[in-house]
Length: 173
Image (cartoon, rainbow, N blue to C red; front, side):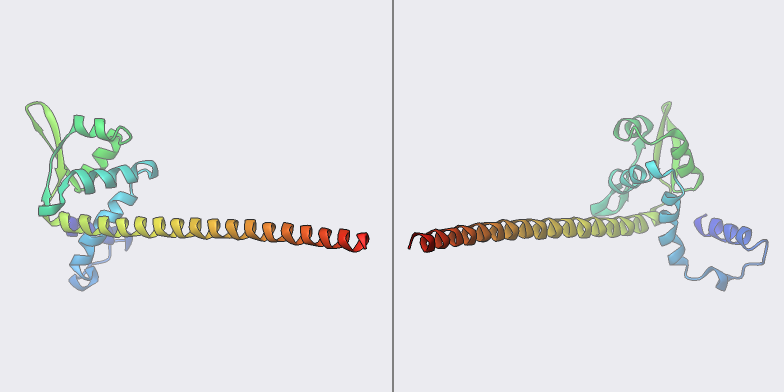
């Protein structure tokens, strides 16, 4: 479905041109980019919530298994995710929804999406860690500069006091 949807979108973008298999490129890249593109298509204020939900709540990472979430769980855990966004995730085939005992249950639509989602999570986690380390390093440099300035001011004050002492001594002689 994902590959067919990609091909269909490519046909639309290229105004009805015939798409040959070689036009699709590496099929693994399609599934890798698919998750990122779906998330980016969501309202900006819901993208991070949708990522967190799919990456951290809908996959048991250790065994790379899909997990289901009841609609009520999603609303409790992610009150900022709108019904419209959930519908968009289902329409895009990232998630599927089914009804069990009168309750809506959402899950990632296919096992083949688990690896690309986890790969995207890893990239995002690495980027978050890099930004955190950069911020920590910037803070360390700021503190060092602040301490150096305090030391400079202390030395200037000492030098001024010594200067005043020497002037007073010279005037006393």
